[in-house]
Length: 388
Ligand code: NDP
Ligand code: GDP
Image (cartoon, rainbow, N blue to C red):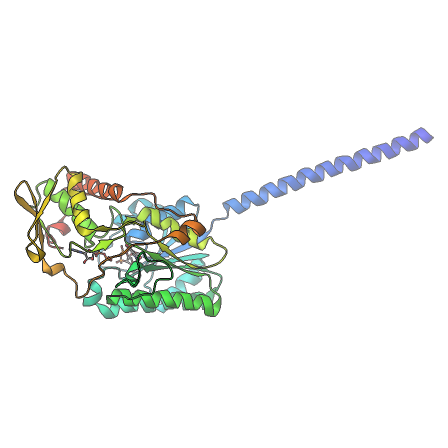
């Protein structure tokens, strides 16, 4: 009898032990499932300015991080998607314009993004003197319209604003940090100062997770051909292949802190992954003149040029032939002479550092232009615009 009872108790204990083990296994499975679910639940990002240089690099980066990427695209008479063509099937394009509040609202409702990267902008400084009002409508009010839409629709959305070193303009100190006062020198710079402060103001007024990336000039093989770096690398490639004899340039002596766009989009993302929103200067900490950029580009194709003359008479020569001419046509009403970033805060808090050196950047851009020209020849659009 006693034996029977103790066997019963033993069996009951064994049963409980088995049940506990089963429960433990189920708990482990549940934990595993929830982590897997977390990993497969994709974050959704909306990128404005997706068709631009940075938009394409950022979209590629976010896709690699496992994001669902939506890109705002404004209707144009010719649909040109060169920069995003390799990504077209992986991203969703939504029609809109950041000057049109209604389109922003309907996109936010439809897409329901967790993060918005506002890269849309009238980004070419000289065009801001010829089209100052539309520049302000896009670069200043456009930012406010997105922030308002976020505030009204979902204040939890994290927001990145593409601010710029052009805000430092006539620089108040060297190098420039997050604390350096602004002194913009173009309608572009002024419009971006509004974009910067309205982002900061919505953060402070409404507690929005809104960050400014104060990015110094960043380039790549897909940089617009009007910007000085790409104008130079494309012209050097054309000269090397015999498509043209020389090119014209403006201020040879202005200095920029040039980095690689592919490195810089990583900093944009890193800002939105922090616990609290803030503003960060992003640059390489090295500065070079337009003149140095030209010399380095010619070196890539084995041409060592020399300079002769002064001011508007100055020319760059190779083996006695003029390959570069200064033209006042490219001078600006007022100039930003010198930019140099101090990105210590980004290095410390975002663990961000640039990976590409000046020489690597120039080489990458010249070689890309050479290869493209060798493969496809001169494009129709380039033939008519030899003077840009
Ligand atoms: P790009 O000029 O290459 O791209 C700008 C993008 O904005 C394009 O996709 C353009 O569309 C889009 N866009 C312009 N206006 C509107 C509008 N009203 N509504 C919607 N989209 C619009 O510039 P980057 O990629 O080089 O620069 C991205 C952002 O970063 C810009 O805001 C620029 O001012 C800023 N910035 C850039 C720096 C740089 O060195 N690259 C440095 C610091 C800041 P579309 O193709 O139709 O023209
Ligand atoms: P920005 O810094 O945003 O204005 O970028 P850009 O690439 O347009 O210009 C960089 C610097 O190069 C400025 O100081 C320009 O004055 C100078 N620059 C000199 N010649 C040219 C030129 O032919 N085209 C452009 N875009 N800039 C030039």
